[in-house]
Image (tube, rainbow, N blue to C red; front, side):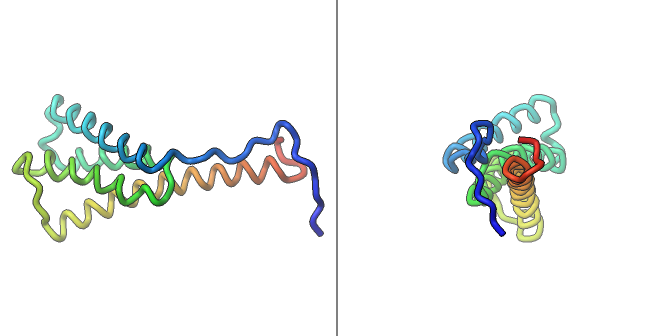
Length: 135
């Protein structure tokens, strides 16, 4: 049986994700800054370090994004990784096995960040609207 209860003033809705174009702009800016920081510390010579840093950025951006932003976010991060972390610098090239794996890793990181946020928000919303929850 469903019991209808009025909304209390303390109940907050689930936060809205950031608009996809803003997430992509943040991905571009963040990837640029991460790549510049890695270049300044000479860590850009190791592509796995750059991929790990860009995956962390993608996961962070996924925390505030919609699922539809994941492919574009991963693509922007991959462009910076491919253009600056792999030799020769400044040239985009597609190596089927390696680049497909890098793109998959970046997409997975973004989707994991988004999934984490959605689960946390859903759990919080459930606890706010159920009897005995921490409202």
